[in-house]
Length: 216
Ligand code: AMP
Image (cartoon, rainbow, N blue to C red; front, side, top):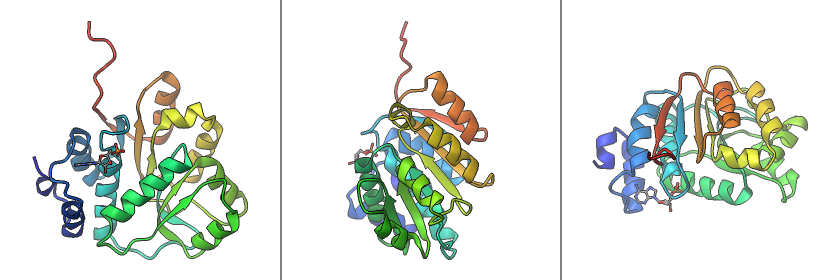
């Protein structure tokens, strides 16, 4: 299978060939068609499987086909990440894959001055990649809202729980619109994560690229 078989639009295919990607990885093969149809997704996948492109490419495709002004102090897509390093990496992937589209991408995480972020978000952005704590700080300061989010991604959800973000994630789930697409990724699916999937996703299509633990 090749990327050209997946129904992605021309600017995205062009960006992929600039990166010399030809074949989609297994998670990309499974997730991209489902996401292009607008379904919610629950993916069990680790780093290194190509999961970032699996959620970035169909979302970029959606924004390419459905252009809209960015909402003031808001965004059209929110990606939640456990760490600032991962957030920066994801944002770079969106910039790379979206280089032939006119979409704005910003990161939001702690450890850097908040005022610069407030300014960057004031006119609205297409895609925000955030860690949960700083995101809620901005919301509490009325510098940002989630009420125009169309696509929500939780990446490495198990890591976010390990870092103590459960309350933040419960709060964020109350702040996003009901009518949205949700993409949920985790390397493991313990009970607490399954509960979170239930809170966030509507009839998610489940894809997995790691074999189930027991091979009796
Ligand atoms: P990820 O699991 O999203 O962190 O991606 C792991 C690495 O694989 C990253 O360096 C990506 O740039 C790269 N990658 C993702 N998809 C593909 C692909 N289809 N072909 C080649 N490399 C890829």
